[in-house]
Amino acid sequence: MRLNEENERCLLYLDAFTRKPLIATAERQLLERHIPAILDKGFMMLMDGHRIEDLQRMYSLFSRVNALESLRQAISSYIRRTGQSIVMDEEKDKDMVSSLLEFKASLDSIIEESFSKNEAFCNTIKDSFEHLINLRQNRPAELIAKFLDEKLRDGNKGTSEEELEGTLDKVLVLFRFIQLMLEL
Image (tube, rainbow, N blue to C red; front, side):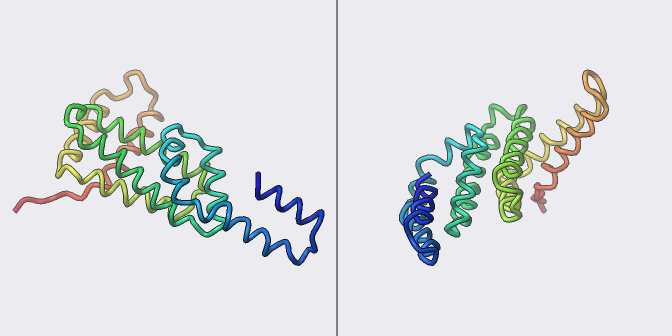
């Protein structure tokens, strides 16, 4: 809003040649200097709340001051921190796969709707998921195999064939993140 106000003032009162430098200065003063504080104080809340429009606004503003790398790093830490709570909680092992699927779907929709399917952000999701899914040796692989087995045994009970195939495709995406640790 403040950047738009400065832009309006430029158009009304100043020469056209001063517009670009003035807007760049306003962006630096109003945004660039405050990026760490913005990420520390509000980013997790926006991600947890799935606040698409606010995240979209953040992406747009950060791209104006070449701060997308800071945003990408914040997403990586968010995924690792949130995902670690899912993967490392042994009491919730039976729900791990479905929780990871929900988490991944949520992240995918945020990347698509808020971050314009930015390739660097997509790679960040991939790398972060690879990291977190391999935190517990082979346990996630076993749970994914059990989940797949249950789905295949149940077949189409209560779901259509398309829904079953969609679920299997999503589970296979998780499976691709696994780096099996072979014991010699």
